[in-house]
Length: 72
Picture (cartoon, rainbow, N blue to C red):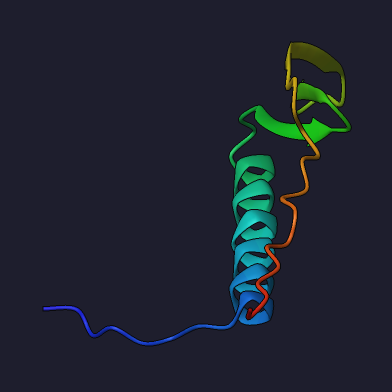
């Protein structure tokens, strides 16, 4: 059974970035292509260094508005 704990957004972001870097490093070691997001484009990077555009993300940078509450 897994233990539930609260994780801050900062810690979650830090661990996600570390996991992504490790996955890219491992893909490079295995000489396997991997995909990344560059702006609104999804790019596949091959072991020899060439890049291929796979797709495009329509809403890549969407900010959710903060909710404001007021007491009457």
